[in-house]
Image 1 (tube, rainbow over the protein chains, first blue to last red):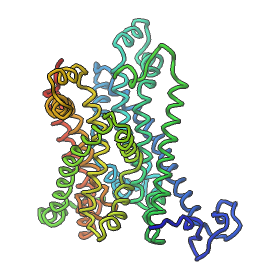
Image 2 (image 1 turned 180 degrees about the vertical axis):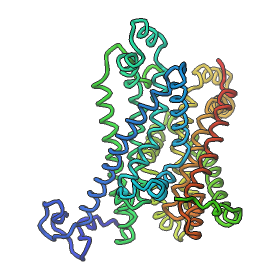
Image 3 (image 1 turned 90 degrees about the horizontal axis):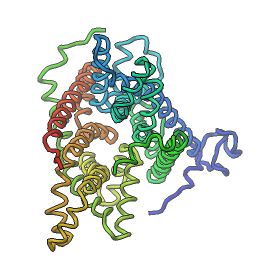
Image 4 (image 1 turned 180 degrees about the horizontal axis):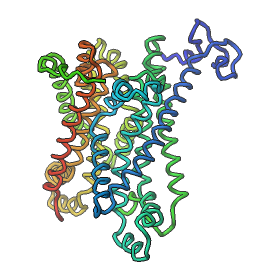
Length: 262
Length: 221
């Protein structure tokens, strides 16, 4: 079995190889004007990253909000409703497989809510993935806030801070630092889970792999390329989060959850 | 938009869903058992003193953990015929893939579980004259597994959710059953809604059970 990586330089339309491996697609090649498989692969990578970034944004905003809501004290009727709502949110989105959620957003919700009818599938997948991940981030957020010593909340209250101020200035800044390590794995999970977008025809890496494997019958080369890009992406995310963790650390003040425990 | 509730009949479940549900459950059970067996081996390799074994195991685990499961499923489906020499069905390919993939995830849980057993247990076992195999099978692993039960069960629930990804190679699982039913009756909306409800009920009740078990099995030291 020999591998033929020349295939990436081949034009996707005709039986010709581009001398610089790029078609005119990225305006760097000169050979053919048609995109090559390499162009296609990199575009697919772009879609994977686009879906992941948008989903991550949605997941962070909702996840942090819901996670914080789950930790408020249940004294008033309103706070009881909020806690119930946020708990229900987490259970709902955590217990349905991500692929089923993607199908729901793609096939079902645009018909139930006509306003969403014209959204492209890229957006629908990002929302689905974002909501799915928000439940998991909310869970970690809650654990992060509860892991803070009780005295922090009490001290804030005895200083006369309101509930919102307590969270804004005391609890959240510390909890956010604590949840960085689990958030790192969630970020990497989002990149991996974005692969389910193939099921609703978003032309990201996995769909690229499936289509080109049938088209060129060079499955192994194509899969190797895709797998390498996934690993590169996951590794980059990992390093970026480590950088954020280092930059936001306050020496001697708070330790992340990975240190401390064994 | 009105839902057509007459879509939900026993006939539908019997014809399309049960077969898929059965496969999903079988896949979950076999992948869990296989994953725990191979995961334990991987964990022991990673914790051993042999440099080669340690690095093989950690490479395997790290690579499996950084590729999407869908890609792993596709890889095995592509490579299996080349390795075995004849084409195998999507179902058999799914079994092999899930055991191989879940072994990596279970091994991380098991490694953490083994590490959670106090060091004194190790020394005590050696002091009693046990060899490595006796120490592991009689002292360390039983305690480690007891600590791990809730986490292992949570992973099994995630595994059950992940079985829906065999959609990529067209294996007939629970989700596929709903899809086929929806297409046959021209009622995709009702079908996908029911799919979501079924998955939710199964996963939610399992995770409630796990919470109960968690309180019971914890060893208080």
